[in-house]
Amino acid sequence: MDVALSANGKRVLRIFFGLLVVFLYAPIAILLIFSFNNSELPTFPLSGFTLHWYHQFLTNADLKGALETSAVVAALSSVGAVLLGVLASVALARKRFAAKAAVSALLLSPLVIPYVVFGISLLLFFHAAGIPRSILTVAIGHIVISLPYTILVLVPRLDQIDVALEEAAADLGASPLQTFRLIVLPLILPAVVSAFLIAFTTSFDEYALASFVVGTRITFPVYLYSALRFPSQLPQVIAVAVVVMVLSLIVVVSAEIGRRVAERRLSL
Amino acid sequence: MAVEGEAGVPAVSASGRRRTRLDLTAPALLGFPVVWLVAFFLVPIAIVAAYSFDIYSLFPGKHGFTLAAWRAFLHSSVYLGLFWKSVKMSLIVSAVVVALAYPVAYYLALSGTKRKYVLLLVLIAPFLTSYLLRVLAWKVILGNEGVLNSFLVWVGVRSRDHPISQLLYSRFAVMLVLTYVWVPFVALPIFVSLESLDRRLLEAACDLGASRWQAFRRVTLPLSLPGVMAGFLFVFIPTVGEFVTPSLVGGTSGYMYGNQISDLFSTGFPDWETGSVLALFLLAVVAVLTAAFARFLQVRQVTAH
Image (cartoon, rainbow over all chains, first blue to last red; front, top):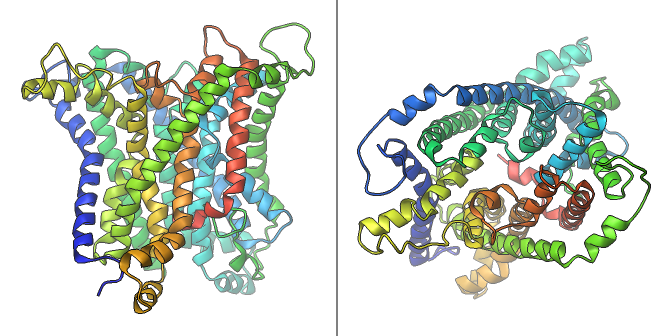
């Protein structure tokens, strides 16, 4: 007999799983349906198919500007977070040093800070330091919150790699930098790429922190938030929502699959 | 979360203990990341503390160390009441999320289904899409002129003049949306803890005469508790300070502590001192919780392959 689940239990849980998946996807499906609906209001009955909202957002300069700003911020902050994350992860995975527990606690602590608290902290900090709010201030904050995620992806990968490879390279005369570039980096590359994508999507989607430190060039989530207050903009916002959701799903899912395939190949 | 260390910190001990000849010293590697976090994470928090003690102020004039803002906060029924309201809402959301995620994680981990990783990805995928847009979806659904009400009118269940109001802009809406947002994420740590369960323990329990229910209650449940605790905290910590969802779907009855903090810093009537006190108090509560339950927050489990 199956010790974990009876046949009936399995059936019940399968139905429960199905219902939860419906609960999770129905709102997304509803957005998708109404993005093609030919009406200002998202209400039943549906009033015909249109691509009008997609066309409208493609010609909306504010929206495109916000998407561009977000892309720049996300690129800056993900590159920054991955660089810092690689440095920190190599130290955590390969080195023994004093106060290691405290240092790793510091490196991971942005994971648990409420964003509203961090947001106002940065606001007061930039105010006190006389730094005007801009794209850079948002990127600085996003590097802080993305850094722990990059470490969480990179350290386990570094742990999987046999240290003997690095020792062999050193024995054969490679400098530490050469060892890193020729041995370690190629082996952790899938993890580096997925850390980069996690940091990029985190930044691209981040509203709470950005709302406090954003300058005059607003990011996409900040634009979205303000657009939500104007009902007339709702249909095209829904259309953008669908595009962004589908794109981010594709990127994240394919990145995860790609990482697993690549790591499997590297481990052979 | 990171790791199996006692303090919830990446205890990268296994490989760290091995001697390596990679000759970059730890300080050189850690320099940039640590300086970055000190400059843009710790110092900003210290500045908030300075504001809360009136060492800094938004307004010109003479300033010095005072506990006035803290004293006012601790005697304020408004702020503390709002804090407890947020704690209660957040506790309910966390409990509901865990209750929804547990059976699903159990099904994936223990039913022997072959496609468990695919199904897990199906479950988690919504979490990877935009937070704001998932909130937007519920705003579209719950509004008085929204999808749900117009659907009910269309099929003739409700009349146009009597929509189900109070769906949107209510405490209920906030809790529903927060539950929706966090369910996929919490399934993960619970799945990991159930997945690593040694099935032979269950077989042994059954051989010794335990029913399935007894085996679950005495073996499976206790062993999966770390995952449950981790999941609970993963929801509670971000939701107790939440302000985005309540400001979009909460109205006045869904107003939370995080909204109060945010409002004290926005234009209008800013009060940075009081806001700083509120923010630090929240931070202190979260820090104490994190420290107390750090051993459950095994980061490596979450990132396990």
